[in-house]
Length: 464
Ligand code: ARG
Image (tube, rainbow, N blue to C red; front, side, top):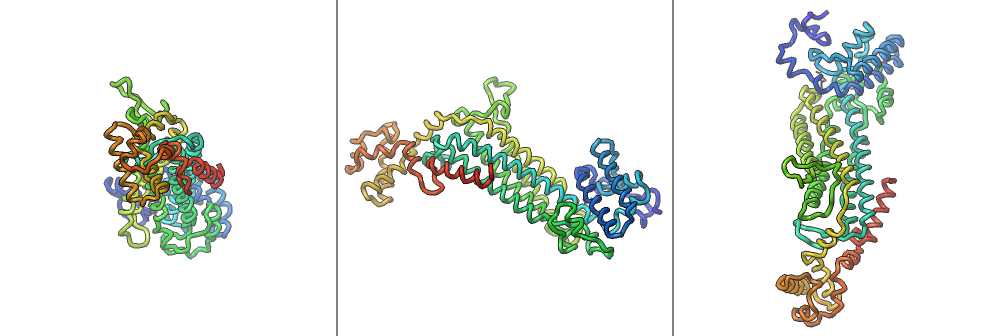
C-alpha cells in the first residue's frame, strides 16, 4: 500500500505527498468536473467490454455498473464532494466508486489509462457541442429564411466601403448570411464526421496486452470506429482545434452581422428596430435603447479565437505521446463552446424579433446616387457606348446632380442632354431602385425572383 499522504491512485513509489503548490498547478478537477457524464459513460462502456471479453468477472462488472450509476446521480444531484488531492474527474469518480463498491472498483482501470480515458471524454464532450451548434445554426438559418421571405422584394442600399453602392433587397442581404451560416453548419458536420473515432483502448500510448475489443467500446459510445494508432489516439487534440477553428469562423460571421445590427439600429440609419427582449436601457439617458446583445455577440469572437490560438500554442511543440500540457485544452474548449452556443441563441432571438423599417430602407436605397451603375449600363446598352466612356458620362451626371442638390432621377432631360446629347427620356426607366433590383436577374443576383429561388433552394437543402 502506498504511503498515507501520497496519492492513493499513483502514489505507490512516492514517500511523500505533493506540495500544496504542486497540487494547485496539477489539479484539473475545478474545471474537468464538467466531463463527469462523459467519463462515466466511457467507464460503463469499458467495464462492459472487459466483462464481455472475460477480462473481469460479470459480478465485478455488475458492481461497477451499479456503482457508476450511483456516482453519476451523486454528481448530478450536487452531493458529490470533489477533491483536489484526487486531481481530476477520472480519479475522483474512481475513488468514490471504490468507497461505494470496494475491491471491484480497482479492476475498472484494467487495460486503460487516464490518457485514453481523457481523450475519449473530451471527444464525447466536443461531439455534444457540435450537435448543439448544429441545432443552433439550423434554427438561426431558419429565422433568417423567414426574414428573407418576408422581405424578398424590399429595397435597401447595398454598400461597399460602407458607402452606398447599388440597391439590393432585404431578402438578398439576409440570404448572404444564410450562405455564411450554412457553410458554418457544413464545417460542424464535417468536423463531427472526422472526429467520430474512439481513442479508448489506446491505453497509456502503446495499446494493451489484454484481449480488449475496441470495436465494442467504440460502438457503445456512438463512435464510427476505433482510432487506428494508439500513439495518435492519446496525442491528438486536432478535433478540439478543428472545433475551435470552426467556432472562430462562425463567431466572426456572427460578429459581422452583429456589427450591421448595431449600425442599422442607430438613429442615423433606422433600418431595423430590435425588440425590447434583446436590448437594454441607459441608467442616465432615458431615451436610449442599446443593442447590447448585438455588441456582446460582436465581442465573442475575441475569446473564441483566443481559445483557438491558445490551444494551438499549447499543442505546437509537444512530442508524442501524452504530455500534461494537454490538460490545458479543456478550459479553452469549454469557454469557447459556452459562448458560441450562447451567441448563436442570442442572434437567433434577435433575428426572429427584429423589425425591418421598410420606409427607411427604401428611402436610403434611393439616395447616394445608388442607380448610377444602372445609368451607365443604359448608356452601354442603348447608345452602344464602351463601358469606360459610359462610366465617365455617368460621373459627370452625378456631379451635375450633386451641384443641383438632387438625386439622379430628379435631373431634367435637358440637364441629361447637356452632358450627352443622345440621352433620351427612356433613361428614367432605369433610375428607380425597384427597376434596378428587378433587373439584376443574374444567378445569385439581388432580383426578388432570384432571392425567392435561393430561399426555396435552402429550404429544400435544410429540410426546413
Ligand atoms: N487530467 C488529465 C488531463 O486532463 C488526465 C490525464 C492525465 N494523464 C496522466 N498521464 N497524468 O489531461
